[in-house]
Image (cartoon, rainbow, N blue to C red; front, side, top):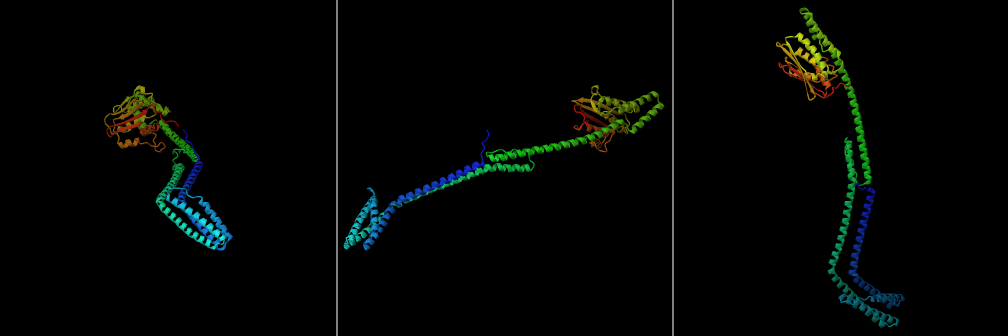
Length: 494
C-alpha cells in the first residue's frame, strides 16, 4: 500500500495554526480564571464597598448641608437635594429579612439613615423659615447621628471582615488551584508544541541525514549504495527521488566506462597474445622444418651409414638410409601444429628404427600404445624430442643395456603419454628448471629439444598447469608424463 505523502509547507502551517489556537485558548482560559477570581473577590467585599460608599455620601450631604445653612446658597441646596434623593433611592434596596446578624444590623443602619434624612429635611425647613434655633439644633442632631452611623458602618465592616478571615484560606487555596491549573495548561501546551516541533524536525532531518550519508559514500566511490527510501513529505521525496536517479545514473555510467575500459584492455591483451602466439608458432614451424635433428645426431647418423656401407652389404645400408629418409620426410611434410597421435608414432617408429640399427645391443626400446588411441589429437613433434633427450643425456657413462619405454593410456577423457628411461636421472633442481614457464615472447625461448616441448605444451594448454610432469632422481632414471584433456581444445587460434 502506497504511503500517503504530505506537504511540509502544509504541515508547518497546520502546526502553526494548532500552536496559535492552543495559545489563544490558554489565554482565554487564563482570562476566565482571572475573572473568576475577581468575581469571588467582588462577592466577598461587595457589602463593605456599598457601606463605604454610604459613608462617603453621608459626608458629602453633611458638607452641602453645612454650606447651605451657612450661606443659604441655592447651589449648595441643589447639591443637598440631589444627594438626599440619591440616598433615598438607595434606601429602597434594603436587605431582605434573614436570620443573619449582620443583615439585621444593616437593616437597622438603613433605618438610621432614613431618620438622618428626615432630620436634614427639618433643618432645611428651619433655614427657610429663618428659625435659627431649629436648624442649628437639627444640624447638631445630624452630626451626632452621622457619627454614630459611621461608627456602626465601621463596626459592621470590621466584624464582617473578621468573619471572612475564616474563608480567606479557602479563597487562597482556590486561587492557588486555579493558578496551578493555569500553569499545568501552559506547561502541557509548551510540551505538546516542543514534542510536535521535535517530531516534525526529525521527520524532515532524518531523510536529509540519509542524503548526506549516502553522498559521502558516493564521494568515497561506493556507487552501489542502496537507494534512500521515500518518506511522507512530498517536497523531500522529490529531492530523494532526484538524488536516487542521479546516483543510479552515475553508477550505470561508471560501470559502462569500466566495461569499455575492460573491453579495450582485453582487446589489447588479446592482440598481444595473438602476436605472441604468431611468434611462437613461427618458432614451432622452424622447429618442425629442422625436424628435431641437431648437427651432432646428423653427424653420427651419417658416420654410421658410411661405416655400414664399408663393412656390411648394401642392403642393410639401404635400410638404414631408408629409415633416415623416412624420418626426414615425416618431419618436413607436416604443416599443422595439432596432429593425430598416429602421426607422432609413425615418426617415432622411424626414429627408433634408426636407433636400433645404431645401438643394436646397448639400447632396448619398448612401445605400448593402444590402437584406439592413435586418433587422439596431440601437439606436433612432442615424442621424438623426448626420446632423443633420453638418448643424448640419459645413457652417458652407462655400461649396461639402456631402455626407453613409450606408453599411452586414456582414463576419464585424459590421455596420458609417458616416455621413460632407466638412465642416469636428473637432480631436482634440473627438473624444476626444465618445468619452469618461460614467457612466450622471451628471446631465450628454444626452438629445439625437451624445453621446447614443455613450453609448447604450456602454451597449448594454459589452463592445465599439470600438462607435463617429470619424475627423476640421480641413478633412478627419468619418466616424463604428458596429460592431455581430450575435451579441451588446444589454444591455437590467433
